[in-house]
Length: 373
Ligand SMILES: [Zn+2]
Ligand SMILES: [Zn+2]
Image 1 (cartoon, rainbow, N blue to C red):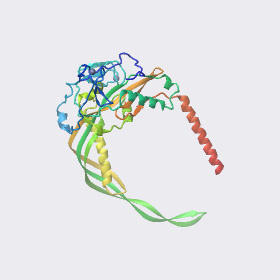
Image 2 (cartoon, rainbow, N blue to C red):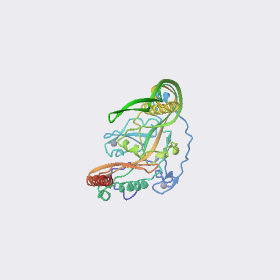
Image 3 (cartoon, helix red, strand yellow):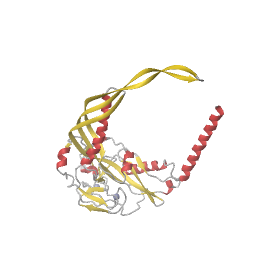
Image 4 (cartoon, rainbow, N blue to C red):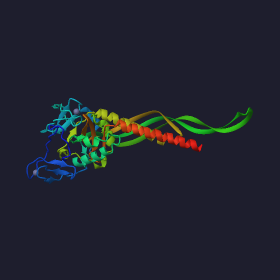
């Protein structure tokens, strides 16, 4: 935490508990992005978390559809925001006072299930202080923002949230029918008239010979990543990607100490449909690469998806907003890479100046070209 953060609302604090108590003072320990270990906010003691990457267990998708999985319910409680609908997960003894996704204080504990326990997590690597620094660099670069913005904005508190994603594996076998076009050239002679005089010209004209072809295409897909939530900040999440999945480690509740998690709002079957669209596009590209021809039009593809497995994973983001002239602008910082995205006010005066400058430049170039022609 930094003293530069303006805490707009005293209530605007999420009190989460750590799952582990400090061996020295009994305080609740929190996950520290700087050290990757648990740290006591009271006495500074640290405790290592054993990082493992053995969670290769892929859960069977079809079995999951048959039974509802509530494996995370014993750790987490669900808070639902009445304003934006986002569902925040906190440790059982924690309370949320405001919604990190929209800032509303209309957030209440609900009896919804926490659902499927995550298999893997990318732990935070960017601390709150670093996230604030990244934000400050970002806002200095808002060249179209009013000049006074940089002096007068008020930064709200940052929330560290783990955002849910699904990854799917699938073995696919496809049967396809394609229309293949091959170029060939014919020599045509035609008559043209120049000054009323007929003249014969010959030229090469490209034609296409079409035929139908059918075949089979097999590909195994590993870790196809799709969003598992649709919150008010989702549009911004896209712009702080990518996340590097090589840093995924086995989920341990310690990584979430001091942070919150968002519950998936996109169900497993819907997530699979999204993944299937990605897979189908890649299959079509694969078929195009396999078929020999100048043009390949796909007529039909019928795919058999086998051994579908899934994982619920969590990726780290810092969410916050700043206030400028009574308007709140949301921004996100990637908790792994520090990449920032957000909305900022735009100065119409500055935009107008640039438009005028561009128009003058264009006029200048036209005048210059005129001189040389
Ligand atoms: Zn302590
Ligand atoms: Zn909300």
